[in-house]
Image 1 (cartoon, one colour):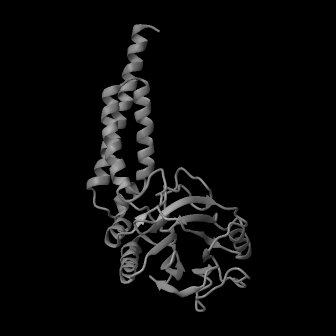
Image 2 (spheres, helix red, strand yellow):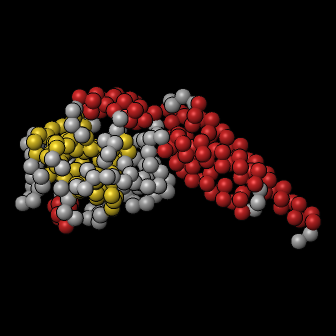
Image 3 (cartoon, helix red, strand yellow):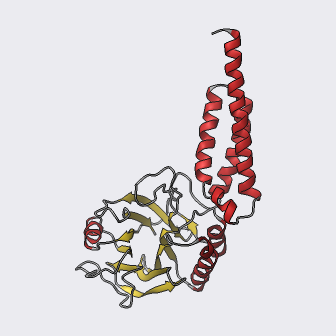
Length: 303
């Protein structure tokens, strides 16, 4: 390769990396300093994808031995990593120190309950958290009971293989609610809350998470929350909820929109939240029996 050709290639690489660094800088400024209003929130919800793209650019700059550019990009990777890890786990679930396990099967957009119950039974699930797209009938079988007799079978309910101490529904708006159940496990009472905020509107976020925070702070027993929280944990309303309640995200980022097991463009909204000592052993996608339903998830939680 001639000298001029090599020089032009180096100039192109330098120009590409300079533009990339400028875009990374602008995005970082938005993430850290911009007000989280409707306009900027559209940028902030893509923060994990931005993190992955930045890692790819870093690897590329290292491979072509542009070490000064690599150092600058690494600086922004560290900043973004600190922001993301302050409210979530990026690549790994939180390991627990307990010895007892509880298995929760979760599904939203459920159109038929029997296939879900069959799968949950095969996986020896203790709890089935259900969020239907229509009113469901015949929701009880020999192994799982509906303890909350007034549950809304068209919005949110929980089936349990463990006798319930109490159960009920939390109402956030005319369209959003969450079901909960209190059971005895590991020689103590534990509350499990079934969340589906997938239909939450942007203008509802603040009030919904405020009401959820107030409910959590009123309880005096350990709480486990599972489901689709509608937004990612680093976004302001969700992050504020975590700070106020002391709840921790226990799962790695789950890049799924429910329709596909993996979608690199999905925002990680599926989460397991719990008290500090709680661990998450495994997250597993189960078989989807109906095309208009989302994939069920099995959470193996260490108490």
